[in-house]
Length: 443
Ligand SMILES: Cc1cc2nc3c(=O)[nH]c(=O)nc-3n(C[C@H](O)[C@H](O)[C@H](O)COP(=O)(O)OP(=O)(O)OC[C@H]3O[C@@H](n4cnc5c(N)ncnc54)[C@H](O)[C@@H]3O)c2cc1C
Image (tube, rainbow, N blue to C red; front, side, top):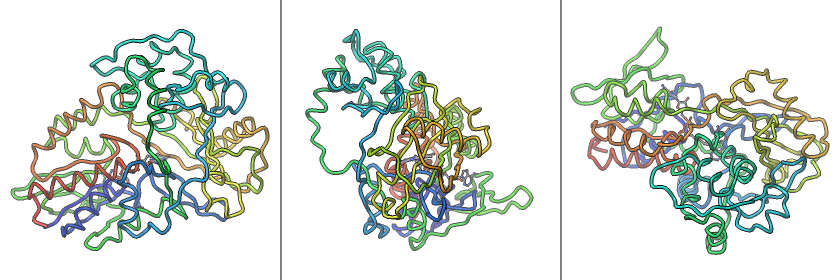
């Protein structure tokens, strides 16, 4: 029995891994000329570095499990430091203890000089979904929202708290209850999780896609954009390749692991309700500028976040050579700056030279000086991150219901229930399991 997986990002790879490991005959059809989607290695100076995602949440098992399953556990490492700062009010200020930006200690917050809580309100948590901004600003004021919560969410979703859904993006904040400050203090005091929060791979997490693709029983076809999927009497027919030379591929089942706009087009005929809901999911575009330098900045933390209210060019920076031992071991300084949030497309219309110069000027201002880079590379990520706007979980429920009614069709990826690598791996593996459990494919 044959299954086609549309899209060779981590969600598609995880689905394919699960299917192939269970004995199915799997083909991944990837539209671009490389696997991995938002995971990508590239050269900067004489180094090979991650130009997309670079770390994996270690407090969830799915990422680490897949790394171990494909034999990369020997390369697994944890960051040397994850101490982050906020660049605001003219300087880098160590981030105080928070729960997704909700301060857990007002004395520490005051000492940081980042934000003030003037007149906190204790208000019930609404049953319906609201925006993160509505929820936080009415309880703790704009300053905490603008200078703590907004930059944190900007880092994960490249989005804006005015639009992002409380339930989908920050359920930990909703779970703090009516008194956010007391809830955050209690949550931090009760935090029992131990061990490192993040993990990476020596040589970069961009090695994971190729390792997964080496799973026996798994075929990969690059430059194979899927243009249509059509139901046949006993399975599915895919139209694949350039418009000038479309080929057909017949399979028993399909996992659509492409981002929402492509998924919406592909399933419009067979799951119209899902397609309609998918089409409503917006994406933010961004760019990562990676600099290699010979001298380190006078800064010891892993990096910093920038509140949008401060009007800077960059939204965050990571000093990879402080964060990862394997990068430090190269003897070079490596800094990644990220640029672009939802609705800031004009920023990304600058050419690479302007983006490199704009981000470097911010880094120099934040660090109080920085040597001339040996090399810099701009990696643009169009359609980088899905925006979980208010009502997202209802849209996902609609998509899941609609797709579940179609035999032999599954969807997975960052558009649904989490954008982080462990979440998309979970999404891919769950989609594969549903196909296997339904007996659609006789693996
Ligand atoms: C710059 C950046 C940094 C990030 N950093 C981190 C991080 O450090 N840690 C973390 O956990 N997460 C990070 N994320 C988020 C995470 O990397 C992504 O959410 C996740 O990798 C998305 O996986 P995916 O498989 O759902 O989608 P994608 O990676 O987007 O893969 C989808 C694939 O489908 C292909 N495709 C699309 N249409 C078609 C079609 N019609 N036919 C065939 N193929 C098609 C695309 O070419 C692509 O390869 C980052 C994201 C970005 C953009």
